Length: 293
Image 1 (spheres, rainbow, N blue to C red):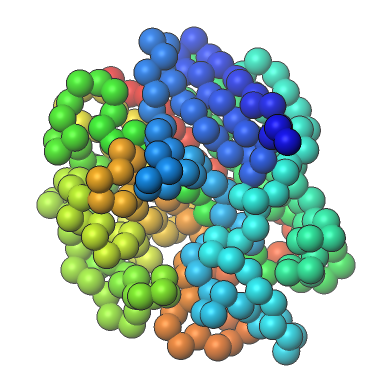
Image 2 (cartoon, rainbow, N blue to C red):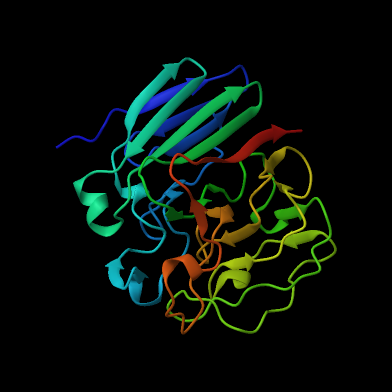
C-alpha cells in the first residue's frame, strides 16, 4: 500500500519536502538542489526529522504512571508514527494537524491537537509546532525536534572539519545517558573547545550529547568555513546532538523535555521537563534553519 503523497514547499533559496506521516521534514535543498538533510541510510537510521510528542526521550521501563495507572509509550512518544491531516497548503507554507484518536487515547488518555507549520522565507525554514489541550482536565506533555542534517554538508568541506558553534559559552556539563537511554545522576564534562564542538565519530560511540542546562538559543553548523546552517531555538531549554559512528548525518535536537532519570518511579507530572497544559491551553515550540554564507 502506497504511503501518503509528499508535499513540497519552496522559496527562492530553499526547497523542502514534507511527509504527512508524522508531519516529518524529509528533504531540505538549496537552490542548486544540494541536499542539506540526512540520506536516511537504513544501515544507520531511517529517520529524517521526527516530532517528539508527548514525551522526549525514554521512559523507565517504557511506561509512565498517571493517577495510579500505568501506560506504555515508546521512546519519543507516538506522533512520529501517526498520519497527520493537511490543514493548510500554500507554495511556501504547509500546516499539518494530529488530533487524538482511538490509538492515541489508549496510551495517552487526553484530547489534544498537535499542529505542525513549516514556512519557507528566503533562506530560512521556520518550524512552529503548537500543542493544544482540547480536553477538560490538565494534560501533561513535552515536545522536541529531532532533525538530521547532512554530515558532511554539500559544500566541499571534509567531514572531519565540521563543527557546531554555540552562540554563547556553555560552562555546564552534559547529562549522562546510561544504558537503556535513561539519564544518570552525575554530569559529564563539557566536550566544547571554547564555544565550538568539533564533530568526530568517537564523540558518539556511547550515545547522544545532551545539555540539560543551556545558555544558547542559537548555533551554527558548518564545515569550519564556507556556507553553513544557522539553527535558532528560542524557548527550548535543552539540546541533544546525536549520530551513529560512520553515519552521514548529525542530529541537532532542541527539546522541552528529557528522558527519565534512572530509578524514576513517580507520576508523569514529576517527570523532568514535563509541562502542564490546563484545559484550553496552547503552547508553540519553534526552531528556524537558515542557510547562511
